[in-house]
Length: 177
Image 1 (tube, rainbow, N blue to C red):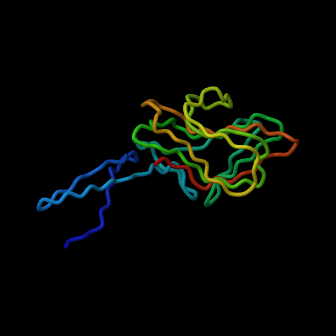
Image 2 (cartoon, rainbow, N blue to C red):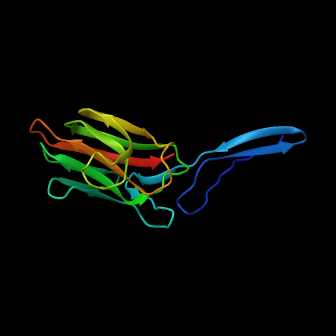
Image 3 (cartoon, helix red, strand yellow):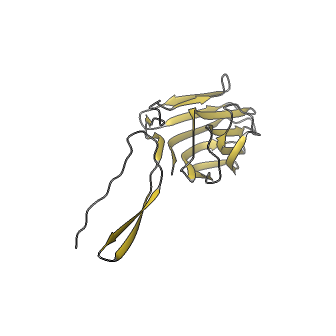
């Protein structure tokens, strides 16, 4: 019996899952390799397939992003349309899920998270999204992107603030798998 650890990377920042069949002495074993694209993780931005480092943006004058040692802090003014996005846009082909780990001191208002054709607060350009209501505490937002066709899309979080209370949230990780 022979066993070993298997590690597979393509070195370009973009990888995808694949299935490998192994045949030995009439026996067949199937192994599925799963990869993630780390867009942001604990204080570090990843890179896209061309080696360009990801960065975060926000709606000017109404929102701010502060990068800390282990997270991104997002502050949003009350009663405005709020925006957080990742640049550059990405090609999600080969991935099935987009996720974000977010902790809100006060996510004051409903919103959406997903892939969109633009990086504005417009919510009509999402091609895949999940919606959420006001919340406090930790959440992992998850979006099925398996049916998104090959193209370039922005990772975007939009939210409509309300009740005269600002929104404050901490983003720890954003990734595709």
